[in-house]
Length: 307
Image 1 (cartoon, rainbow, N blue to C red):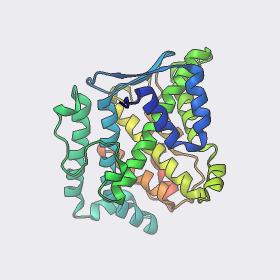
Image 2: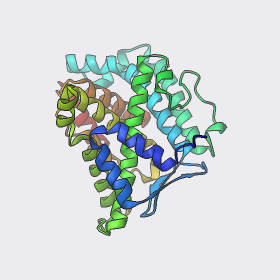
Image 3: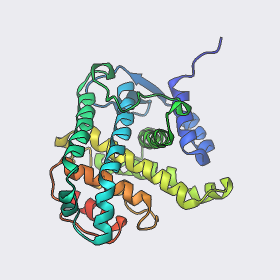
């Protein structure tokens, strides 16, 4: 009889699959620090944290990654045309959106998905919420996805989840080695930086070995990390988004995770990320009297506006 793999093995395999060029290094860290992986009972809010002994999460929080990942894909479809027109004509995003007579209904549909995310956070378990009909239920069966778009979202959700788990692994390492920053907010930012570096620092060598285009590989990893930033935003209660003793302002974390990639200024990464940030601004009813000459410039301006 074949036994089911432990949560610890499942999470290690997820990380190795997401960052294959670091597979051996991750295995060494897994053995060296000897932490457990604990699947807690689902509860209200989001559960994802770490101590020197373990990384803990609940299945509802994993489902949250899935729901956010598939929900924000609709933000891409919703805001891409306006961003493209705004950038090409250097008109403000607000003006272009106001000219789109179909936008109010499309945004209403998107807000329903945002309501589903909030309902999941407020619930004790996934079974308590009405799952959107047009979003597949969470699964580990990538081959069972219906089309290329669903498979693309599956991959991005996996990368986003890997990023957050690497963040928690760094908390374990800090606790074990005793060299964590004394300031809690600084530790959070350090864990974000370490997770981003782990996922991106060896991409050039990986691309050469796999005979892949470096820009394509970086774009996919960066997009997964950008999605992780949006999930972190969703997990952070509005009262905590300004930061405190233990957590930095959410805008600072978004900037640290999204900015600074060497992608071309009009790459799909910057377009995807601009859509995510516009969605956050629209969700908060903030004005978008912003124009730019490239998607990258728009992202940088949006990050500054969110700060």
